[in-house]
Image (cartoon, rainbow, N blue to C red; front, side, top):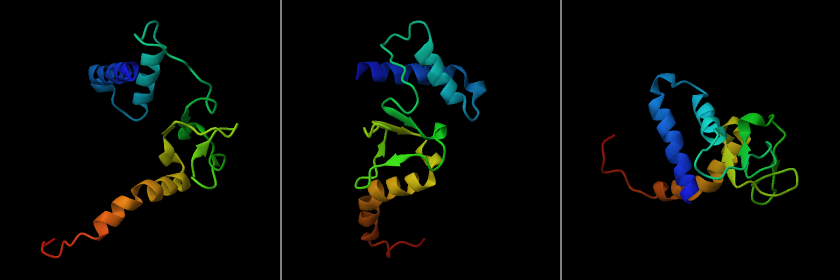
Length: 120
């Protein structure tokens, strides 16, 4: 957990110190810079895309992702479940499934609220 916090702090510091560079895609360069520098200050394991714990949707061609039929979990080619889904909004069908699965109870709670006393 300390390594993750150190990593997040390092990325945040790089983003803050390079505010003039803020445009689409820069955050990925900052992640790579922090992870691949000579001594990031924590242990790093680089995995080949589609063979590690992080699924990166922007690198996966549309229509090629593997989903578990029951849970809609995104699976690796060897049928293991990914731990982290990154850029899942690049795949609209997956985005819809995740929204339905994880926000359903939130929407149900909101639906029972009585807001009739408020002028909107």
